[in-house]
Image (tube, rainbow, N blue to C red; front, side, top):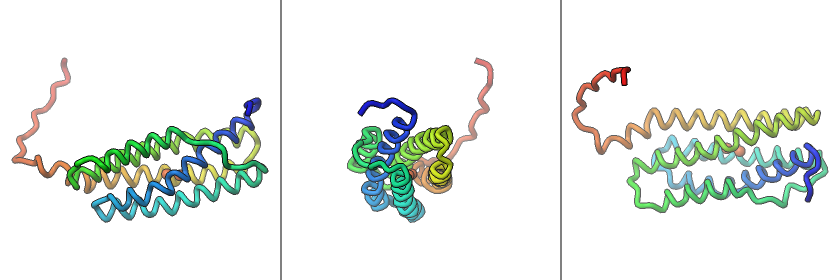
Amino acid sequence: MKINTLQDLYVEELRDIYNAENQLVKALPKVAQAASSDELRSAVEDHLEQTKEHVERLDQIFESLGESPKGKKCKAMEGLIEEASETMDEDIAENVLDAALIAAAQRVEHYEISVYGTLATFAKLLGREDDADLLGQTLDEEKETDETLTDIAESTINAEASESEEEEEEPVAKKSKSR
Ligand code: FE
Ligand code: FE
């Protein structure tokens, strides 16, 4: 299909993220299952429920556009999920695995944040305020999830992950600013 207008591009991009969100609905249960900390597992499970709502919001938008949501494969999300599952298949210590899962999940959130930011802007430019509102709600949830993941990484995971190499700490010499 030839993309002639911003509206055409908007619909194409919506199809792309629709496919990406559906890939995530399938992939997130595996991530939750792989997580070793309860905190991470429940954060991923919560986000799975939000992700299902993201799909529903997109369904609503497609309905009001009178367009089909089908017809695109998000290769970027496919790649991000593939890398995450490679990590899960690797021989990786349990306490480091969570750090790796968070790293993978944050890549996904950042991808979504950029897509929804763009889509909300397109919606506004096209005068589709209701869409912009729905897309903005999803955007906020992706941002919150990203922050939650950062909090988990900072509080528990990275401390656990560095435990094995933790030895008596020497005072860190103050780095001089001169080069
Ligand atoms: Fe999402
Ligand atoms: Fe997300």
